[in-house]
Image 1 (cartoon, rainbow, N blue to C red):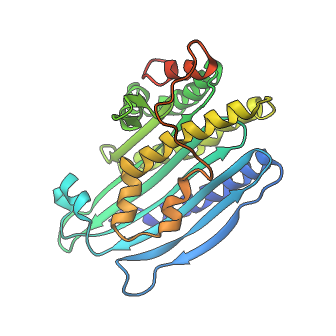
Image 2 (image 1 turned 180 degrees about the vertical axis):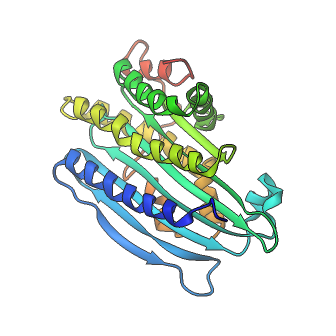
Amino acid sequence: MPDIDKQAVKQFLLELQDSICQQLEQADGKAKFVEEIWHREPGERLGGGGRTRVMTDGLVFEQGGVNFSHVTGQQMPVSATAHRPELAGRRFEAMGVSLVMHPHNPFVPTSHANVRFFIAEKEGETPIWWFGGGFDLTPFYPFLEDVQAWHTTARTLCSSFGDQVYAEHKAWCDDYFFLPHRNETRGVGGLFFDDLNQWPFAECFAYMQAVGKGYTEAYLPIVARRKETAYGEAQRQFQLYRRGRYVEFNLVYDRGTLFGLQTGGRTESILMSMPPLVRWEYNYQPEPNSPEAKLAEFLVPRDW
């Protein structure tokens, strides 16, 4: 595999985790990430390990995590081979950085990002590999200028990889982060891509790097603009209610969560994305024309 450099991908991912953690700690101004190094025990379904880093009780961030994992397995789970039958009977490696940040202030959006590399190999056959990832924004009290700035960053980083990349991966994000049972998107979207191997390895890798680095470029200016916004208990309760949508998506639809749980992955790291506090309310209806009602206008895919 002269053109597939797994070690270069792993090194980038480790450095990306370091960089993102440093930037988020600086943005918070108080909390530090606590790191846990973990390894799979011999005989478990998955091999490998990772670095889980979690931040709690900061000035800006109530809780968040930035995880690196590199796991190996002798066979794919049934859910994956149903989606990709050509993977049956192959050993695999999956590595990536995944993060979710849940702010205190309801006017600061929750954010998520993930970049990953997957390769499946079998003796005497050509390896099957691909990159995936993206980032998306979940505001509770959205500001149009923030959403437009977020998408401008996404569009700019895509521009050197082809004229249609932003449009395609923006649409993929809108489709993927959609809750059918609620008939709404999880947030205002961003970028999402998977199974990326149509370009040469080096170009696919470069795009994954651009997306990984683009997350903080897009998110931290929004944090800086909104973190001092005054709020009260009513806004806090709405934030906790809307966090329920995040939980619903991750546990019911998210491919990464399902893959990790079905392959025997490390549960604490997989569920790191859950918000620390959340609530559900039966048949909640916002007051007409209220700021809470306005959110619905943003949960429909559109050209920002």
